[in-house]
Image 1 (cartoon, rainbow, N blue to C red):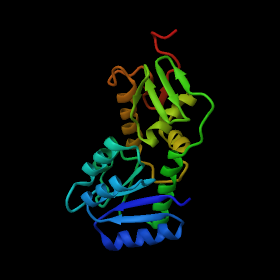
Image 2: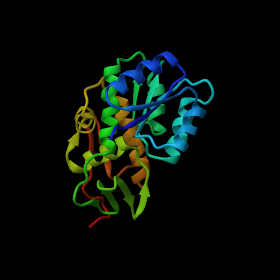
Image 3: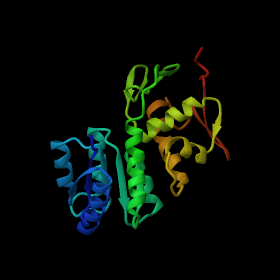
Length: 231
């Protein structure tokens, strides 16, 4: 069954070009030109992913992203004409799964869309990963701490799972990108740092002094197999 995408972008010419390209690639594509129209479409219909422009005529794209993320875990790819690092960080912090600066090639856009869709439907594993109070369940793509469900984007879930799969091993940013992305792209080092920060906020008792995901200065990150208070 073809996957359904929603493009929210007020640039009618660009949206039409992207829509035609993705439709030819086998997707079903809907277009909306304002934030309110996009949110209304999401209320009426289920989409497999959203392509969201930052610059919209009514509601700021960041606010649209926040609203979507508060309602669902639909993968979100944000587009930014400015391409500034600050915009990228803000988008990732509020729940976007990936970003793409304009101008971009339709081929790269398609690759990134397929990557976030692939993460969203990752195959289930037999048993959840358990680390003390932390449980990572691939079959339901849920993360729980003391039984309480924690909200992560699909990218953040896969990043946490990659770290947990390699517990005790230091992984640099490039290796983490390789494990999670599965698609070649222009590396943006700070994006990993932002996602790690969001994961820590979800699973650590004190995100400013993490005990599960540890920074190894100059080397990367390591997932601790056990915390001091775990047997």
